[in-house]
Amino acid sequence: MRFKRMLERRATVREAGTDTRARLLDAAERLFADDGIAQSSLRAITLAAGVNVAAIHYHFGSKEALLEAVFTRRLAPVNEERLSRLGALEGLESNGNGNGNGARAASPTLEGVLEAFLAPVLRLLRDPDGGRLGVLFGRLYTEPEEIVVKLLRDQFGEVSERFTAALMRALPELPEPEIRWRLHCAVGAMGHLLASARFPEIAREFGVPDDGEDATLRRLIGFCAAGFRAPVVPATETKP
Picture 1 (tube, rainbow, N blue to C red):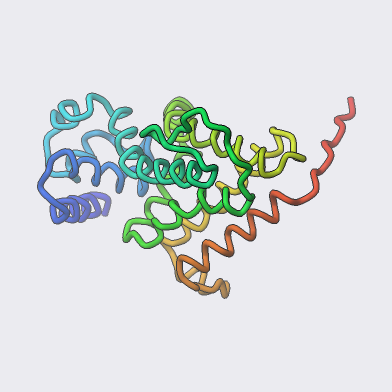
Picture 2: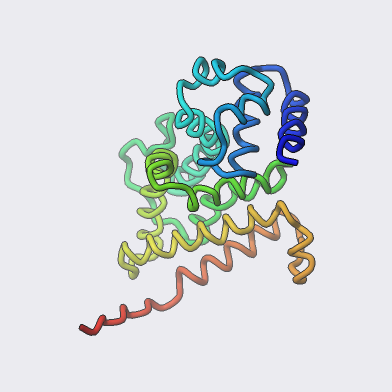
């Protein structure tokens, strides 16, 4: 059964194109999502891509570099759009990589910041592979720590800092740790929507409406905004 699945994956990847590097990325993305990152061997990836093992070392050098390339291919355009939207919202000129040029940042609205953060990701719902991508992102939180910590820092470090700063300007009454905690929860809500796109019948079973991308974005912004505006819950004192 597992071998049959592998052959099906191999056929699917071959249909997607003949470029070796792209075929390796497609195959690795599928296997990382379906079987897990640690469980997907280089041999399995090359078999699915229809190439030899040397091709991975030639194009990427290592499994870790291949994993980074898989996520960069998907996340770089998303994060670039996020930072571009945020820069426009703050009235900053871009210096080519989404950073401000030193001008004083405006104080954006909470909903505006959330839309800049969420909209580029929810656009993936239109992608035929969007559901699998949601599962792939979820895999990051179930894999060995050493595999994903650097990856998360490299992919999301700048985005996290820029949006945390913007949210602190939008909600100056909240302390920074609380802002970071609530942004972490917003990421979880967004990731759940993306992952659940792989099994739309489950959402229908529970009566969740499918109103399209725009309505989904509005609902998610409203949900997250309410969470950000909720009263701060005092920390519970730990008794000795």
